[in-house]
Length: 491
Image (cartoon, rainbow, N blue to C red; front, side, top):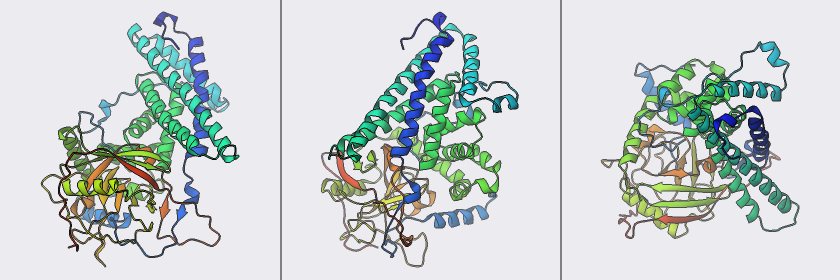
């Protein structure tokens, strides 16, 4: 849609816009069916022995935080990549929110309306408010409407293209799955672009009901996969402001607030929820909210001061691609070791053998079960003068656990296996070296099929294959890597 002068803005023009937006909503629902991981049929490992290299478990982390809070004045009620926003904490008054856009009507009348009728009433109300804005504001909003319209149309097109490739492949008309996978990745990328466009439109102050519905779908998607990035924070905050009081909206807002450096907002939400509404992740976040906030602030400062050309690797997986930035200044030997392994193809074909939502993802074992011990070890670097923080999306090498000592690890025992954190785990900073962070494609990381290698497989249970690394490409590295002082024995 070409942007017209504000005097030409009318309900018919908006009707044409939102009619096309409806196609995107149908498309996003279809994408959810075709592309989202099926958590009900997560893959299982047959090996019974626990992996020798581990990070602190959720239970260990919770026990540690409960012990810490027990000795302080804190009390319990009942990822992500921190954005360089220029502020330490995304306080409430720094997030633009739309004005009151709910229509004023008796609840009984609302209940008798279809969803389409309700959305039309909301749209009429938003248009009425728009006419009261200045001409400059109207022109700005029209541009945002045009952008959202264009992105939803693109989403519709790439979704149908993906569906066509999927149909051809599953019915045997083509043998190559690559075109479908490429189309799938294009849909996922466009979903994120459309999400950003919807957020831009609604935060401008125009309560577009179709943009709000799209935001609701994307927030639910993030809740389902455990992705609590800055877009999840903004989106759930908008929905909360719009009186969307679904439990998953409130939980997403609380978690995303703590993940992204706003602990008081997250804790305030938790304090107003009933005991049965919160989950283990929420109790852990509540107990460690202040520590996470401090680590978040430290990481923001490090991001501002870091070099602009840090080493990066692109990891291609069965779910799509994601990019990892490597902290060569804070963990030079660890990064050099990781880059060397990537260039040697050591990770190609490796399974993600443990994937626990809102906890960790483990990979890097050629045996695919976490049991392989390395031939050589690398020295710890977590006690250097400057270290990176264990936030959602951070990478850390796994170490050998000390028997009968939960949360304790053998010094200098990292080898080849590594973890991607799906949630902040503050305590590992004392024992693990954080050497990188996912900077692109975190939505791919959180969509990896869940796997619990310790869970016994029940009789007749259908196991889906683990997601795996297809290949790793080093896309930026220094000409000369730092020297790694390898050890033949840990300790």
